[in-house]
Image 1 (tube, rainbow, N blue to C red):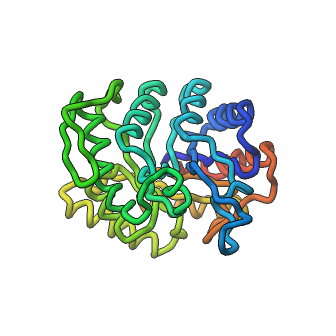
Image 2 (cartoon, rainbow, N blue to C red):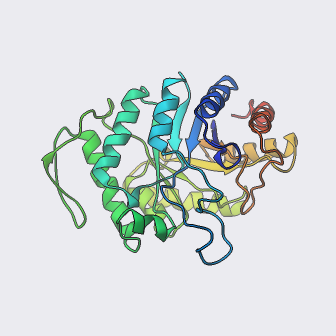
Image 3 (cartoon, one colour):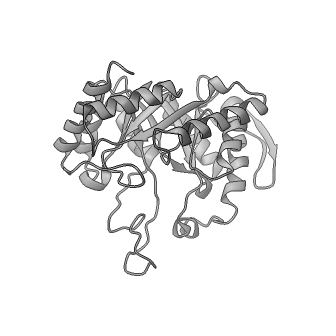
Length: 299
């Protein structure tokens, strides 16, 4: 299994020296990847309905993931990168394909593209995209991006996209960028089975519910004529509760379940995840070191 971590922007902010030092420290600790979240717009908390603060300007700071990861690729050597996840349906597809290809080339192939359909209508309105057909559009987006990465010139006519014998340059050296899906909607698994290289769920604790849904993904992948063993699974974990023995049991469970990537988040505090108590960079790095030390021999 590979081990990564999510940038703790909500606690630390995004000062350039801070994110550089965080990435370099992560690499020095032996982590395999760094994951960057994504939101373009946040609603004014004074005018939104309800009590849910996620996505508001008041609490969430997000660097653009392509800019952030391009910067971090230049100051690291081995660390790989992922978006976790890029809200692809609120962006122009060919532009995302181009940005992802440039990042892949400039990082030396150290990038995988995690995508999702989003949940915040405010962003879609501000970016002049349709919130209500975002899932259906994302299916076509995957096909368009994969064609642009693989072929020098693409002719494509779909419901949402038209490309007339045009292409991007540069393209990834391998002709592909690993495309991973986030989310837990009923349509997510069939999309992964057809077009994805992996799944990034965070809703399932280490129990039979996770085993059942992983089995369903493998069944659908096989049904789509693809090899289930080629589909990666990244789960999120947290270390805000429990101790080393608990973390080891969970990591061993995920490895036995066929998980390929574990992403440690020190700030996520939803569902079965618990954030750490501290909020400084030193607090986060200490937690990351303690967690990796505890499970290193299981990876």
